[in-house]
Image (tube, rainbow, N blue to C red):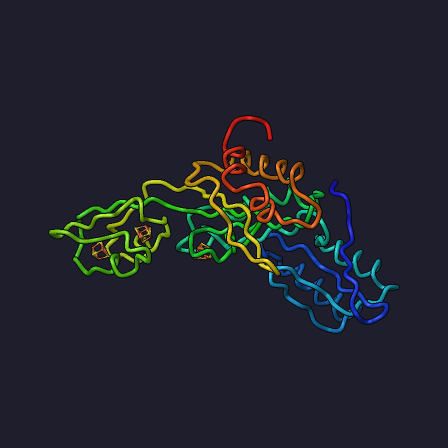
Length: 282
Ligand code: SF4
Ligand code: SF4
Ligand code: SF4
């Protein structure tokens, strides 16, 4: 059975705390929402705060009510979040569970990342984000470790009505038309799903799905976008193996209060990427 932890964040008001809950990938059941509502009404200020990373916080809980509030939340299957120098709640967009653009199952991957790493001690906070496609709703580029679904499309002439929608919706201009044929430039294509979803005749079909792993993204005081570590990986297992290496590397080489991206900058991005991509233990 999973150990129970608290995540009570001290407010500026003396004797008051915010209870941070852990909603992996931003998902909660209606039963959990009811329990949150009941606890917020009974012990909090009658409302919740939705954090920028899909967390839910119940504010204004008094010191003497923290235990009772947590017990009631946990009895509804809710788990507490994390703060401090450790792996935080894993964010995810809905991915291919419901989104037309989704290239990967973000929910299963977020759940596995949560199972493996949540609350693991690290040199500084470590945030993970999983996003179903390069639209990046899951903020993978802004996470210390981000995973992004991608797809490789292929055009077939059958049924094409030459409407040019695919050319117009392709943000990186990777499609062009020549003599009635629609040609994709694989070097420019970012695998965003726009052509496959928007073509009214289904002429752009997906030939493969993959995962891109990005590292070193962060917002905050010293923002930085994530750097691609591996592109178009074929399976969740490969992604997890690589993330294991990144987490170990950060634990070994990261400095106190240094985000993973800033460690890359300090040690030299090319050097770190090379080491992470090799087979040599980190
Ligand atoms: S990132 Fe892509 S898959 Fe995820 S919600 Fe946005 S559009 Fe959909
Ligand atoms: S997947 Fe996106 S980037 Fe690639 S060709 Fe289609 S629309 Fe363009
Ligand atoms: S969107 Fe589809 S139908 Fe229109 S030009 Fe492109 S491939 Fe042809």
